[in-house]
Length: 83
Image (tube, rainbow, N blue to C red; front, top):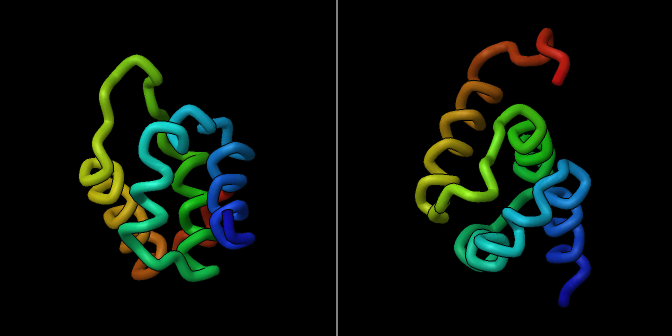
């Protein structure tokens, strides 16, 4: 496993979503190139959103919600919110 992929996995683990990485993390890593900025936004996203371990979650659904959060973060002043 490459160092970047290990960092990607740690983002999920530190946010308490290791189970989510186990289900869709590899697909997410392969599907999209993750810049450092996106990894930071992913950290914030995982802190704010709740994911039910029992409920099915598909990669497309995850990315849909992530992209909405990313756009809100980039195009609105989200710095005033402390996650």
